[in-house]
Structures are given as C-alpha cells and as structure tokens.
Image 1 (cartoon, helix red, strand yellow):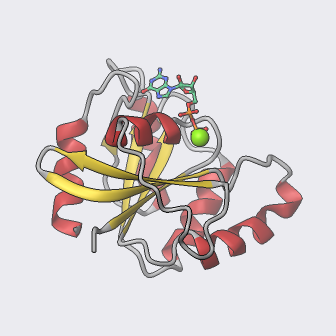
Image 2: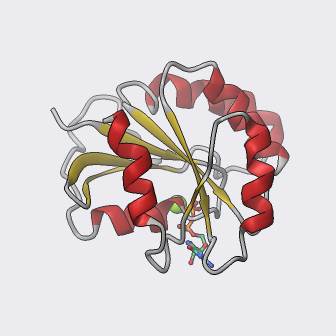
Length: 163
Ligand code: GDP
Ligand code: MG
C-alpha cells in the first residue's frame, strides 16, 4: 500500500497548491473508500523518486473559532487516521498565528511524524516567518514555494526518511 501523506494547515496557506504540484493530473479515484468526506482529496503523488498518496484537507476552512475543537476532533478521527506523515503547511510570509499554535498542539498529541512546511517563501520573503515557526516545537521548517516549485528537493529530503 502506498504511504499516505496528509496536508494540513489553516485556510489560504497553499495546501491545495502544494497538493496540485505533487499530484499534477494523477487524481486518484478513491471515492469508494469508507469515510471519505468531500473536505478531503486524494491523489497519487510523486516527488523525485518517491511515490505516495497525498491527501488535501479543508478541515479548517470554516473560520468560526468557536467550532475549532469540534473540527479538530473530527479531523483526528477521519483525516489523520491512516496517514503516515503530516505536512503541516503555514504561510511563511504571514508568520505564525494562533491557529498554527492550536494545530501544533493538536499534532503533538497525535502519533504521526510531522514535517513543518513554510510556504510562500520564494526569495527571502518568508525568512521572519520561518524563524518564528521554530517556536511551534515541531522542528526545522522546510522553506517552500508551492506556486513556483521552489524547495521541492528540501521537501523530498525531509519526507524521505519518514516514508
Ligand atoms: P489552501 O486554502 O491552503 O488550500 O490554499 P490555496 O492552495 O488555495 O492557496 C491560497 C492562495 O495562496 C492562492 O491565491 C495561491 O495562489 C497562493 N499561494 C499558494 N502557494 C503560494 C506560494 O508558494 N507563493 C505565493 N506567493 N502564493 C502562493
Ligand atoms: Mg485548499
């Protein structure tokens, strides 16, 4: 079975852009899987010589903070189940927000390896945000530009030992 890499993070950080870059047109037909909800998208991904199933999520798209715990529980039950690695994407230009701190707390309680990804980091525009992200306690961030395809080798190097 292909290892599963789940892409999570708050809205607008570039999760779907990263998913599309990893998957291209190879969208998998996995709608017959039990428990698949329409806030997730599966695709056959490849990165350099690695093959895996990428899972795009939209679990935090609702911006009503009062329902965050409920959504996080739902995410825990359905989305992270079966994932081998979580790619936790944040916007390196915007830096770390309370929602990143919330997601980081949630992830630390889960039994899944996490790769922290600072997206929108083309040029040096994300440097301050990348530095801030060390405080999440999830290790070294991978600087990426999903839109421009920068940092894919670094993402490969971070992901490869975990798959
Ligand atoms: P999602 O809500 O996390 O799935 O985010 P999307 O993939 O829909 O992207 C949100 C916005 O960020 C879109 O306008 C993208 O074009 C933009 N975006 C995504 N990746 C990058 C990037 O690497 N650099 C920049 N500057 N913008 C990006
Ligand atoms: Mg999206």
